[in-house]
Amino acid sequence: MKTRRFTQQGFTLAEMLVAVAIASVVVAGTTSLFITFLRSYNNTTLMRNTATQASMGLERMVYGVGTNGGLRAAEASKVSVSYPSGGWRIEYRTNTWFQYSPTTRRIFNQSGKTICTNVIASTLQYFTNSCAISVTVAESAGGRVHTNTMRSLVQFRN
Image 1 (cartoon, rainbow, N blue to C red):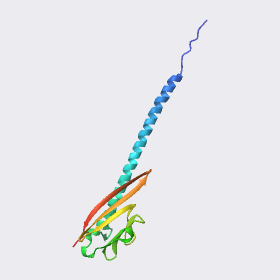
Image 2 (tube, rainbow, N blue to C red; image 1 turned 90 degrees about the vertical axis):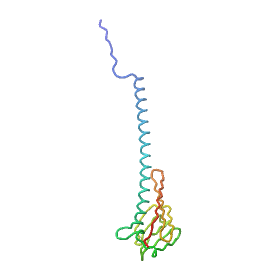
Image 3 (cartoon, rainbow, N blue to C red; image 1 turned 180 degrees about the vertical axis):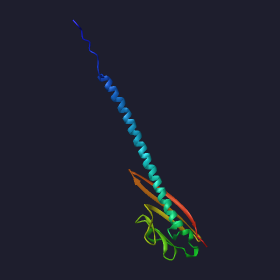
Image 4 (spheres, rainbow, N blue to C red; image 1 turned 120 degrees about the vertical axis):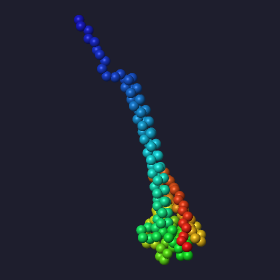
């Protein structure tokens, strides 16, 4: 009589449980790492966007937009400042000005063109031959809010 020998094929239940446990730990770690990097990327993007918006807004006011010269080209004797409804307005030539409106959260010029958006605060201090402008921009995404403030001192021409 011949005896048959059975050879084991496949994995035992214990081996499968160990393999699934190891795979689960690897997947959980990878997912956690991905979420951490994604949050960091979003935070960095918010920081960059707010800094760019605030910087660009100040640059447009100081150096001008298109053929419209900015505050840097303004003559000190022709500059006038007013503070309408919680914001500010600086006029530096005939019918040439910039205005901050806290209700619309933007800075715009005489033709209504938006110079800077998402402005949550802005100050303008007027001196005899110069002015100091600060612009604070806020942006939110993914449950996070980031603000960035830029300041500039503009010396007028005499």
